[in-house]
Structures are given as structure tokens and as C-alpha cells.
Amino acid sequence: MSTGTNRCVLITGTSSGIGLATAIACARAGWTTVATMRDTTRAVALNTAAETAGVSLDIRVLDVTDDESVREGIDSVAAEHGRLDAVVNNAGAAHLGTLENDSLADIRACVEVNFFGVVQVSHAAMPHLRANGGRLLTISSVGGSVGQPFNEAYCAAKFAVEGFMQSLAPVARTVGVQVGVIEPAAVTSEFVANANVDVAAMVAQAGPYAPALTAYAQRVQAMYEADTGTSQTSDEVAAVVMETLTAPEMPFRTQTSNWARDFVGWSLSDLNGATVYEETRGWVS
Image (cartoon, rainbow, N blue to C red; front, side, top):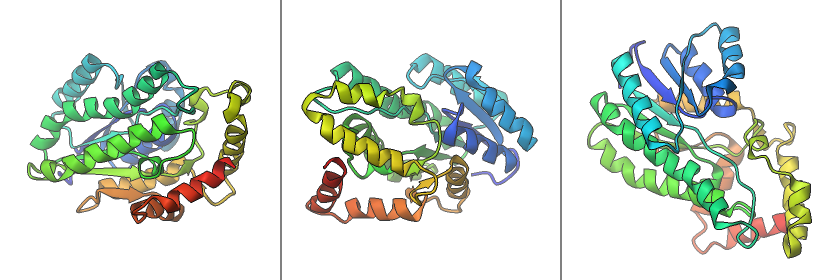
């Protein structure tokens, strides 16, 4: 990958949270930064952050669930900027629910944005990344290694992302493209709020799952408190993204905190699944 100041990166889902923070961090580092989102009327916070940081961004519409939007968006970036050196797949959507209470449409919608959206962007970007010895980095989650209660659809999508990218990584490397995933844990951003979940209403409609959902919701609320030691800010995660993106050799899997490393480690070393099962079972008791 080029080490000059003309490096160009495209980031999806930059209206808030990790995507916004990563866009600002890339621009500060001298990258030509293309910050994309489904609806650019939501770019107010991003524009404000850019003005505060004294950086310029190329803000564009890109809907990761729309193949035409993805292909036209990525091809136009490569054409107008003359290159594409890196893509950060950040766009995603939280989803809270469980199998019996979710509709199949809910599950499909979650997988569509969190998995197929990543695949669509990556598919369109690969020829450009291959031409420049580029990097393909996807914001996954500890939920891509550890299945979590009431997150079946979300974790399924993230597991799929990690399986896809881990399988792609050695193949892509033969043509000069490095592939990796970032696994944050709890992040104090708008991600969960953007899921538009009314937990009280969900509990009221959860039937026999109400006690378990109540216990889980209380645990998550505690985790997202900034002083618990388990959560990070979006800026802290973005710093890890930048460190990974610019490393001489990009690791495949990077956790963003010691807590995330320990948490993912339980699953990666848990051959029969008992450790993770006993841990997560306690979240809903």
C-alpha cells in the first residue's frame, strides 16, 4: 500500500460513532477520506467534527444494501481520486431480539445490512484495492466470536462476516490485498440508540422470555456506562483502527481493548463451548 499522503480511504457508516471517529482520524493522518452514509442529511455531526478538527472530507451517499449505490459510489471514488487504497466496512445496525419473538423479515434485514452489505462493498472495492496493494478492514464485534443472548441475528451476521473475511484473507493476500477485522466490545456511541429499541415494550411483549430479557437489558445498560471499565469511546476504537490500518503487516483479527481480548479469548479457546455457555447463561438468569 502506498505510504504517501495521497492515500485514499473509503469508510461506510460515518454519520456517527466509530465511522465518524475513524473518518476524522484518517483525515488527520493525511489520507484522502471518503466518508459515506446512506443519508447525507445526517452528516451534521460529521461536518461539525471535521470543522473542529480542521480537516476536509469527501462526504458521499452510499447505501450498503443497494448494489447500484455501492458500485457507482466506489467506482466514482476510484475514478475521481485516481486510486482507492483502503476500505473500512463500518456500516451496520444493532438488533435485539430472540428467535421465537422475531419475524424472519427482522432476521433477514439484520443479516442484509451487517453481512451482505459488507460483502457488496468488498466485492465492488476489490479490483481497486488489488490495483493499489490495498487493505480491506471490517468493523466486526466481539459478537463475531462470542454468541450472545438476544443477539442471535446480529451475532450470526458478525460470525458470517468473520468467517467470510478469514477465508478471503489468504486468497486476497496472493494478489496484494490485506484483509482484517476489528472486534470492539461495548462502545459509548449512538449504535445501540440507532437500533430504535423500546426495551420496556419488548419486555412487555416477550411472554415467557420477559425475565431473561430484563436481566440481559440490565446487564447491557451497566456495560454501556462509561465508568464500568468495559466500554470505550468511539475515538478510542478509531485509534485502534488507524493503528491496524497503517501497520506494516495488518493482523487479521484485532480487539480494541484488554476486555475485548479476554472476552474473545474465552470463545477462541473454548473447544466444547462450555465456557461461553456458562458465562452467557448468567447474563439472562
